[in-house]
Image 1 (cartoon, rainbow, N blue to C red):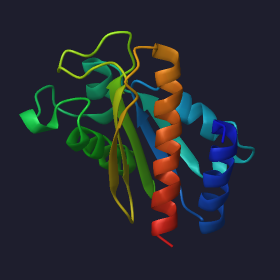
Image 2 (tube, one colour; image 1 turned 60 degrees about the vertical axis):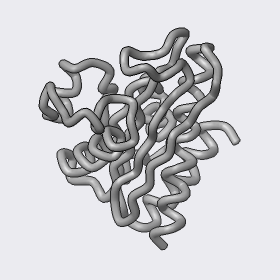
Image 3 (cartoon, helix red, strand yellow; image 1 turned 180 degrees about the horizontal axis):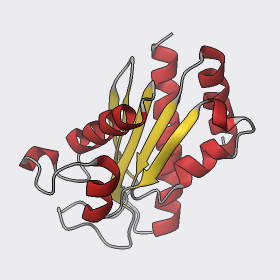
Image 4 (tube, helix red, strand yellow; image 1 turned 90 degrees about the horizontal axis):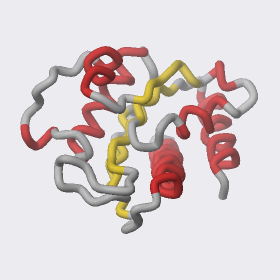
Length: 161
């Protein structure tokens, strides 16, 4: 399934439930937000988001401190969940969706290989997953991370019924 089909399905579910979403993404580079915003009528469910790619963006967009506990480092499941909870709270959304990882062609400074991403959903249901594509191909990884984020959101929405 392509991103536009996935985002149309989650957008329809959010709209039908009268719920909203906010997004904080990193290595997907805005593809999650772009897919959601490609849905006609997205303003009914999409409150906003940002590409939180640097420490400066993390401070400005999420208001997270520069130093976090070691287990909450970027590109980790605890950080993804913190970002999802934070973007949800900051924008007053029913759901928060966050992605953080290493798109490639090299790994990140935390020791994760290229193709690693952690994705979290926060809302009535919370879920976190780690994706490992085992590829150094930057753009395909970005698309895989966005697809993984929309898949996780769809699962969370199904579980929250």
